Length: 289
Image (cartoon, rainbow, N blue to C red; front, top):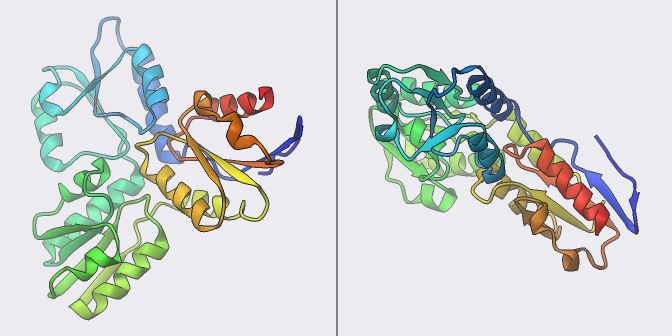
């Protein structure tokens, strides 16, 4: 979708894929429905930020959502919402023992990665995960692996892995396919059998391609998304790699008038965990500026 129109001396070009992906929208809708349909006084919890967008989480908290650091903080009998990133099997077992309702919002693409990791591990493969070792999605996938598992962020780290007879390569859903291919290339001489699973979400790929299509068409890109969002960080890297000046902000409050100076055409992109209301706020702020 192309949205363009004169705003003063500026023109805004919206990336044709931006904002909530299917998995995040599904999760947020489930949270809102649970909060609105629960009895007054009911405790509704999530473990960690349900999505990596602090403004949207603040909105959900204002509606009554409570956020725990880990499963041990969830009270007995409370309703717990499993975020789109998923949780390890051991955490799910502990939650079931507490006796409360569990609303599982694990993204289907993450669920596939969890299941593939578990199945290949049980078949004797050493699992290599492409992603951020501290990201909750990677931790959830690791929780389905019973055997050896390594997490690598790039081809250099993959190059430091030892040689092994059977290796399964699985990706965090928000990574880049080019990076997955690079790591597979590095692993080929390190194993007699390599199974590569492309578990990267199609919505992630679409948003990355949408940012690439802005190259050469705009003077700069305003990227809207939470600073802890892995997929938004990838969009920033792609924009910069394609020669675009990037302003990454979480909300309209971060809009910098000085950054706009000298620019006549502005691209707008957003991560998969960015709600539409935040994107609209940013566009309105640019119009006022």
